[in-house]
Amino acid sequence: MKYCSVCGSLTEKRIPEGDNRERDCCTNCGFIHYTNPNIIVGTIPVKDQSILLCKRAIEPRYGKWTLPGGFLENGETVSQGAFRETFEETNTEVEMGELYAIFNVPQINQVYMLYLAQVVQDDYSATTESLEVQFFQEDEIPWEEIKHIIISLINDFYASGKEFVINKALNETNEDLSEIEKKIVQILNNKIRPAVAKDGGDIKFKEFKDGVVTVQLQGSCSGCPSSTMTLKQGVQNLLCHYIPEVKEVKAV
Image (cartoon, rainbow, N blue to C red; front, side, top):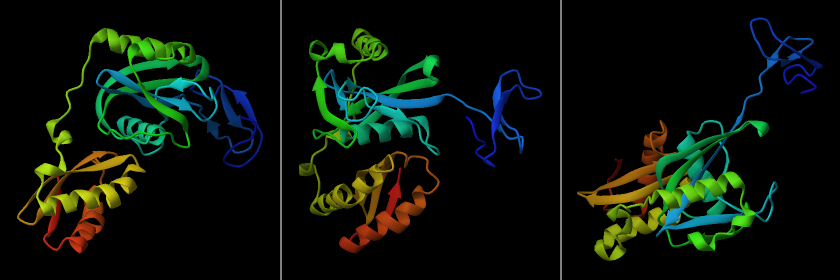
Protein backbone atom coordinates (compact mmCIF):
# COMPACT_ATOMS: atom_id res chain seq x y z
CA MET A 1 0.00 0.00 0.00
CA LYS A 2 1.53 3.29 -1.11
CA TYR A 3 -0.98 5.80 0.25
CA CYS A 4 -2.90 5.97 3.51
CA SER A 5 -6.59 5.14 3.17
CA VAL A 6 -7.41 7.61 5.96
CA CYS A 7 -5.58 10.81 4.99
CA GLY A 8 -4.03 10.02 1.60
CA SER A 9 -0.45 10.57 2.70
CA LEU A 10 2.45 8.27 1.86
CA THR A 11 2.93 5.11 3.89
CA GLU A 12 6.10 3.36 4.95
CA LYS A 13 6.78 -0.20 5.95
CA ARG A 14 7.88 -0.57 9.56
CA ILE A 15 7.19 -2.62 12.66
CA PRO A 16 4.79 -0.68 14.92
CA GLU A 17 5.47 -0.50 18.63
CA GLY A 18 4.26 -3.64 20.37
CA ASP A 19 4.01 -5.55 17.08
CA ASN A 20 6.33 -8.13 15.55
CA ARG A 21 5.40 -7.78 11.88
CA GLU A 22 6.12 -5.14 9.28
CA ARG A 23 3.02 -3.08 8.44
CA ASP A 24 2.09 -0.22 6.12
CA CYS A 25 2.11 2.81 8.42
CA CYS A 26 1.06 6.33 7.49
CA THR A 27 3.88 8.88 7.70
CA ASN A 28 1.39 11.66 8.50
CA CYS A 29 -1.50 10.46 10.70
CA GLY A 30 0.21 7.31 11.95
CA PHE A 31 -2.64 4.98 10.95
CA ILE A 32 -1.54 1.34 10.77
CA HIS A 33 -2.92 -0.66 7.86
CA TYR A 34 -3.36 -4.34 8.68
CA THR A 35 -3.61 -6.68 5.71
CA ASN A 36 -5.33 -9.97 6.51
CA PRO A 37 -6.08 -13.12 4.47
CA ASN A 38 -9.21 -13.23 2.32
CA ILE A 39 -11.87 -15.81 3.17
CA ILE A 40 -13.13 -17.82 0.18
CA VAL A 41 -16.41 -19.68 0.73
CA GLY A 42 -18.21 -22.17 -1.46
CA THR A 43 -19.87 -25.56 -1.70
CA ILE A 44 -19.54 -29.04 -3.11
CA PRO A 45 -23.09 -29.21 -4.57
CA VAL A 46 -24.18 -32.79 -5.09
CA LYS A 47 -27.22 -34.72 -6.29
CA ASP A 48 -27.40 -38.49 -6.76
CA GLN A 49 -23.61 -38.71 -6.32
CA SER A 50 -23.02 -36.23 -9.16
CA ILE A 51 -21.25 -32.93 -8.51
CA LEU A 52 -22.43 -29.63 -9.97
CA LEU A 53 -19.53 -27.67 -11.47
CA CYS A 54 -19.47 -24.27 -13.12
CA LYS A 55 -17.21 -22.96 -15.88
CA ARG A 56 -15.79 -19.61 -14.85
CA ALA A 57 -16.89 -16.51 -16.78
CA ILE A 58 -14.41 -14.23 -15.01
CA GLU A 59 -10.67 -14.18 -14.39
CA PRO A 60 -8.67 -15.79 -12.99
CA ARG A 61 -8.99 -19.16 -14.76
CA TYR A 62 -11.59 -17.93 -17.24
CA GLY A 63 -13.25 -20.84 -19.05
CA LYS A 64 -12.09 -23.46 -16.53
CA TRP A 65 -14.38 -25.77 -14.53
CA THR A 66 -14.50 -25.41 -10.76
CA LEU A 67 -16.70 -25.60 -7.69
CA PRO A 68 -18.93 -22.57 -6.98
CA GLY A 69 -17.32 -20.16 -4.55
CA GLY A 70 -16.01 -16.66 -3.97
CA PHE A 71 -15.13 -14.02 -1.42
CA LEU A 72 -17.02 -13.79 1.86
CA GLU A 73 -18.79 -10.41 2.10
CA ASN A 74 -19.03 -8.16 5.14
CA GLY A 75 -22.02 -8.94 7.34
CA GLU A 76 -22.25 -12.59 6.25
CA THR A 77 -21.65 -15.80 8.12
CA VAL A 78 -19.53 -18.38 6.34
CA SER A 79 -22.53 -20.57 5.49
CA GLN A 80 -24.53 -17.58 4.25
CA GLY A 81 -21.69 -16.59 1.94
CA ALA A 82 -21.35 -20.14 0.61
CA PHE A 83 -25.11 -20.30 -0.06
CA ARG A 84 -25.05 -16.94 -1.88
CA GLU A 85 -22.00 -17.77 -4.00
CA THR A 86 -23.54 -21.08 -5.07
CA PHE A 87 -26.76 -19.38 -6.17
CA GLU A 88 -24.89 -16.58 -7.97
CA GLU A 89 -22.81 -19.04 -10.00
CA THR A 90 -25.30 -21.85 -10.65
CA ASN A 91 -28.73 -20.17 -10.44
CA THR A 92 -30.03 -23.05 -8.36
CA GLU A 93 -30.89 -23.66 -4.73
CA VAL A 94 -29.07 -25.93 -2.31
CA GLU A 95 -29.71 -27.34 1.12
CA MET A 96 -26.60 -26.50 3.16
CA GLY A 97 -24.85 -29.43 4.82
CA GLU A 98 -21.80 -29.74 7.02
CA LEU A 99 -18.59 -27.76 6.77
CA TYR A 100 -16.53 -30.18 4.71
CA ALA A 101 -13.08 -28.64 4.34
CA ILE A 102 -10.88 -25.76 5.45
CA PHE A 103 -7.57 -25.23 3.73
CA ASN A 104 -5.01 -22.46 3.46
CA VAL A 105 -3.23 -20.99 0.44
CA PRO A 106 -0.71 -18.72 2.20
CA GLN A 107 1.20 -17.82 -0.97
CA ILE A 108 -1.84 -15.79 -2.11
CA ASN A 109 -3.18 -15.01 1.40
CA GLN A 110 -6.44 -16.96 1.11
CA VAL A 111 -8.36 -19.34 3.38
CA TYR A 112 -10.95 -21.63 1.76
CA MET A 113 -14.04 -22.93 3.60
CA LEU A 114 -16.28 -25.34 1.66
CA TYR A 115 -19.59 -26.92 2.65
CA LEU A 116 -21.32 -30.01 1.37
CA ALA A 117 -24.62 -28.97 -0.19
CA GLN A 118 -27.57 -30.87 -1.62
CA VAL A 119 -29.02 -29.49 -4.86
CA VAL A 120 -32.78 -29.40 -4.31
CA GLN A 121 -33.93 -28.08 -7.70
CA ASP A 122 -33.88 -29.59 -11.17
CA ASP A 123 -33.23 -26.18 -12.72
CA TYR A 124 -29.75 -24.69 -12.98
CA SER A 125 -28.12 -22.43 -15.53
CA ALA A 126 -25.19 -20.21 -16.41
CA THR A 127 -25.06 -16.75 -14.84
CA THR A 128 -22.98 -13.61 -15.30
CA GLU A 129 -20.25 -15.39 -13.32
CA SER A 130 -20.36 -18.75 -15.13
CA LEU A 131 -20.27 -19.74 -18.79
CA GLU A 132 -21.76 -23.20 -18.19
CA VAL A 133 -23.18 -25.18 -15.29
CA GLN A 134 -23.29 -28.97 -15.46
CA PHE A 135 -23.56 -32.11 -13.32
CA PHE A 136 -20.66 -34.56 -13.57
CA GLN A 137 -20.31 -38.16 -12.47
CA GLU A 138 -16.88 -39.02 -11.08
CA ASP A 139 -15.64 -40.50 -14.37
CA GLU A 140 -16.91 -37.48 -16.35
CA ILE A 141 -15.17 -34.69 -14.43
CA PRO A 142 -12.74 -32.62 -16.57
CA TRP A 143 -9.84 -33.13 -14.16
CA GLU A 144 -7.30 -31.40 -16.41
CA GLU A 145 -9.12 -28.06 -16.00
CA ILE A 146 -9.51 -28.11 -12.23
CA LYS A 147 -7.07 -26.81 -9.61
CA HIS A 148 -5.07 -29.50 -7.84
CA ILE A 149 -6.47 -28.64 -4.42
CA ILE A 150 -10.06 -28.86 -5.73
CA ILE A 151 -9.22 -32.21 -7.31
CA SER A 152 -8.15 -33.47 -3.89
CA LEU A 153 -11.41 -32.33 -2.33
CA ILE A 154 -13.55 -34.00 -4.99
CA ASN A 155 -11.55 -37.23 -4.73
CA ASP A 156 -11.91 -37.18 -0.96
CA PHE A 157 -15.67 -36.71 -1.30
CA TYR A 158 -16.09 -39.76 -3.51
CA ALA A 159 -13.67 -41.82 -1.40
CA SER A 160 -15.61 -40.98 1.77
CA GLY A 161 -18.80 -42.51 0.38
CA LYS A 162 -20.84 -39.64 1.79
CA GLU A 163 -24.46 -39.41 0.66
CA PHE A 164 -27.13 -36.85 1.25
CA VAL A 165 -30.56 -37.81 2.50
CA ILE A 166 -32.98 -35.19 1.24
CA ASN A 167 -35.57 -34.00 3.70
CA LYS A 168 -38.88 -35.52 2.62
CA ALA A 169 -40.54 -32.12 2.92
CA LEU A 170 -38.33 -30.81 0.13
CA ASN A 171 -39.72 -33.38 -2.27
CA GLU A 172 -43.38 -32.76 -1.59
CA THR A 173 -45.30 -31.84 -4.71
CA ASN A 174 -48.16 -29.46 -5.15
CA GLU A 175 -50.43 -32.48 -5.54
CA ASP A 176 -50.33 -32.90 -1.76
CA LEU A 177 -51.49 -29.32 -1.13
CA SER A 178 -54.90 -27.71 -0.89
CA GLU A 179 -55.88 -25.02 -3.36
CA ILE A 180 -55.05 -22.25 -0.88
CA GLU A 181 -51.68 -23.86 -0.10
CA LYS A 182 -50.91 -24.06 -3.82
CA LYS A 183 -51.59 -20.32 -4.13
CA ILE A 184 -49.32 -19.61 -1.16
CA VAL A 185 -46.49 -21.68 -2.64
CA GLN A 186 -46.93 -20.00 -6.02
CA ILE A 187 -46.63 -16.52 -4.51
CA LEU A 188 -43.63 -17.53 -2.43
CA ASN A 189 -41.88 -19.06 -5.44
CA ASN A 190 -42.69 -16.31 -7.95
CA LYS A 191 -42.71 -13.11 -5.92
CA ILE A 192 -40.74 -13.62 -2.70
CA ARG A 193 -38.06 -16.29 -3.00
CA PRO A 194 -36.26 -14.76 -6.03
CA ALA A 195 -35.85 -11.45 -4.18
CA VAL A 196 -34.70 -13.10 -0.96
CA ALA A 197 -32.25 -15.35 -2.82
CA LYS A 198 -30.37 -12.31 -4.14
CA ASP A 199 -29.26 -11.67 -0.56
CA GLY A 200 -28.32 -15.30 0.03
CA GLY A 201 -31.52 -16.32 1.81
CA ASP A 202 -34.52 -18.50 1.18
CA ILE A 203 -38.07 -19.08 2.47
CA LYS A 204 -39.73 -22.50 2.32
CA PHE A 205 -43.42 -23.20 2.87
CA LYS A 206 -44.17 -25.57 5.77
CA GLU A 207 -47.93 -25.50 6.44
CA PHE A 208 -51.14 -23.46 6.45
CA LYS A 209 -53.48 -23.91 9.39
CA ASP A 210 -56.21 -21.73 10.92
CA GLY A 211 -55.22 -18.72 8.82
CA VAL A 212 -51.53 -18.95 9.80
CA VAL A 213 -48.81 -19.63 7.22
CA THR A 214 -45.71 -21.28 8.67
CA VAL A 215 -42.46 -20.92 6.74
CA GLN A 216 -38.86 -21.98 7.25
CA LEU A 217 -36.09 -19.40 6.87
CA GLN A 218 -32.81 -20.54 5.32
CA GLY A 219 -29.48 -19.08 4.28
CA SER A 220 -28.93 -15.44 5.29
CA CYS A 221 -32.53 -15.22 6.56
CA SER A 222 -31.89 -17.82 9.26
CA GLY A 223 -31.11 -16.10 12.55
CA CYS A 224 -31.12 -12.66 10.94
CA PRO A 225 -32.40 -9.95 13.36
CA SER A 226 -34.36 -8.29 10.59
CA SER A 227 -36.10 -11.51 9.49
CA THR A 228 -39.13 -11.04 11.76
CA MET A 229 -39.67 -7.51 10.49
CA THR A 230 -39.25 -8.69 6.90
CA LEU A 231 -41.90 -11.35 7.42
CA LYS A 232 -44.39 -8.97 9.00
CA GLN A 233 -43.91 -6.08 6.62
CA GLY A 234 -43.20 -7.93 3.40
CA VAL A 235 -44.21 -11.57 3.19
CA GLN A 236 -47.26 -11.33 5.43
CA ASN A 237 -48.62 -8.21 3.73
CA LEU A 238 -48.16 -9.74 0.29
CA LEU A 239 -49.82 -13.05 1.15
CA CYS A 240 -52.71 -11.33 2.96
CA HIS A 241 -53.25 -9.07 -0.05
CA TYR A 242 -53.55 -11.92 -2.57
CA ILE A 243 -55.10 -14.53 -0.29
CA PRO A 244 -57.75 -13.21 2.15
CA GLU A 245 -57.70 -16.50 4.06
CA VAL A 246 -54.16 -15.74 5.27
CA LYS A 247 -54.13 -13.80 8.54
CA GLU A 248 -50.57 -14.24 9.78
CA VAL A 249 -47.11 -15.55 8.84
CA LYS A 250 -44.81 -17.30 11.31
CA ALA A 251 -41.31 -18.70 10.95
CA VAL A 252 -39.84 -21.88 12.42
